Image 1: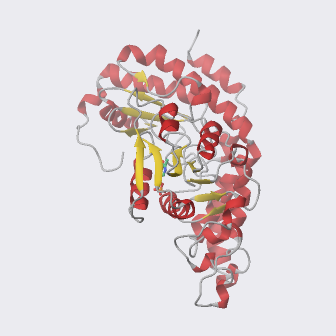
Image 2 (image 1 turned 120 degrees about the vertical axis):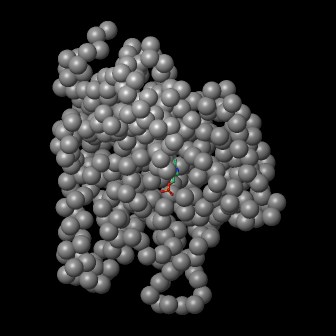
Image 3 (image 1 turned 45 degrees about the vertical axis):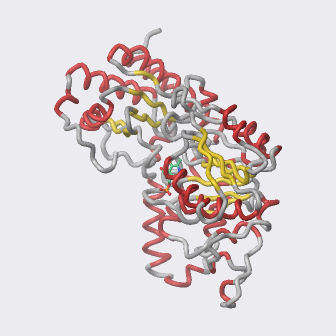
Length: 419
Ligand SMILES: Cc1ncc(COP(=O)(O)O)c(C=O)c1O
């Protein structure tokens, strides 16, 4: 197999999404950006949309804009997102952050499934999700969190052990559909069905799936989901998150934060809380309008591209990257720390190395941006709307050059606060 630059360029000619690259702002043509799974790139359309919202909707229309679309935006954007995650309309809203949405839905689920009191998750989950779930069970006496270990390799989940941990006290199974570090992708339909059989609800954190891989919440029978707006949705730093509640469950869940935006008639200013019908009851308070509307162009772009094409392209790019790592980086002490089977992988590939932190800093200095996840992973995020085969080839060559030249040896070992 030839894995040279000419071959990478030839692959890019057949890249199904190659025309989308020009829709993104790219001030530095030499930069290879592989961190779209932490912060997606800025689209030209989002830049224009934010300017228009600031200048016209806020600057000129002022408070009248609440009636001209701002009030409805959390649900309107939810419906815009819905087909990207396999959801029928009326089940998705944008609100708050992913962490806050997890807390709201976990508490509502615990309340709904009482007297059951256990939440089940596993050690591949994002640590913050585990903290939030731990905080949620502390709100109910007798409730507890079970964190199923994945001791065998920290790359693949132990789905059988997970299913064994679900019993007749399980109120909720809460997992990341694609694990943040290794990129392991769960068999969501299987886990959802097994949890339902045991009488539990299931929540999927889609932060590393949405806009990257195909998600089919309705078809899986999922009950609840949450996810970030600033990663593959390209919504911008601190973009609001989304939440999904299956239609049949909405009227049976009581939001733990009973805010006025989720009240049946907020402008009646009644002192008694009555939840709105439908998904709006899970929107607690005033949305961050500038950030919320900045999300719209990114969602529209993914709808235009189509998730089947995005997923197929991400798989090809990921498999190609793994081939490059085996071929060029394995002799330099790197190993693939993500599943090799594309059906079991999300859209990022992690490579592990004993000196990963210093190498990741030296790689950034060489104008390739990955991120580092302790203790030893360099995450290479593949956002197929703007990442091509040649980008991956360049990234791997620069990574190899860092180690061959020992450029990382000059980097201090003390870690910066944000990695
Ligand atoms: C899988 C996952 N869940 C939750 C979060 C937390 O999101 P937030 O900080 O926006 O609440 C993140 C952030 O990166 C994440 O990757």
